[in-house]
Length: 315
Picture 1 (tube, one colour):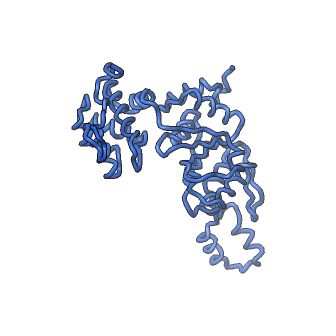
Picture 2 (cartoon, rainbow, N blue to C red):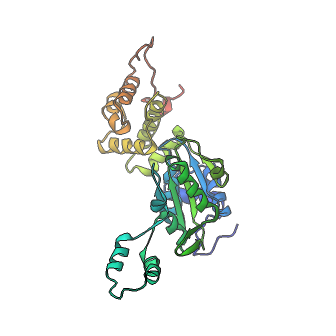
Picture 3 (cartoon, one colour):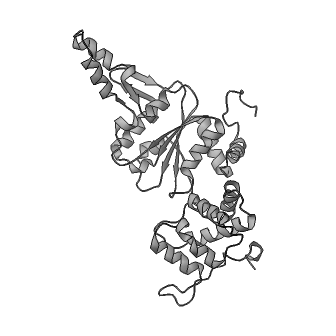
């Protein structure tokens, strides 16, 4: 496939997407590369679902970095409304304009003035639609908003246009690449899902997490990366209130490097578990497992082999 013009940094193939995301330090597998490539070529929003902390937001950031696009992020939350997502008027500036009107113009003339472009405050959705440069629009954690706000997103994503009563309809001249992320805390509407491509991300395998650690943590040895990834996997298998995210796994690896630890002993792991886990009950569960202590109600100690050298696994 021929390469795009120099000013166009779109992905030219799924393999190109994987390679350039890797250069941006996001280790995408072929499935992710293929889905991102298709979404870009078809100009379809991409809905990325999965547990918190598996790299959904980072995927959008990395695509923006890899393609040279500007990232515009809308962080969703309960109570998000049109004024925070689309636009609002600069009421203070409008009031000053009215007070400064010494000529006592007719209201109709003044209204045209204060409801003009100069008094408009674009929010993320409108900013993305009006931009004339490449944009990656990230609508983060859309499952946090109410159904009414989701309908607003749906209206914008359907036609990539916004109607402002005082100014008319604004249509995107260059469609942004849109990522919507969801932690799957509630079901999204079928109408929204129908307009999006879908990608599910889960916690990485031991091998992939090891590669992520080596790519992102300076000074981390392959042996320590292997131990960290295996221990984190064993901890995630526990019944935790909040399993450790990839970012917390990275923080833990950086902590171990900072402390000069070259190989993890059980004591080393339990001393720094507060970097990896954020609830005392989770820390205690992980501590007991990593030290091989007997769980309450268990007839035998919990086996852990995460501290063994990589070549010993499977022996």
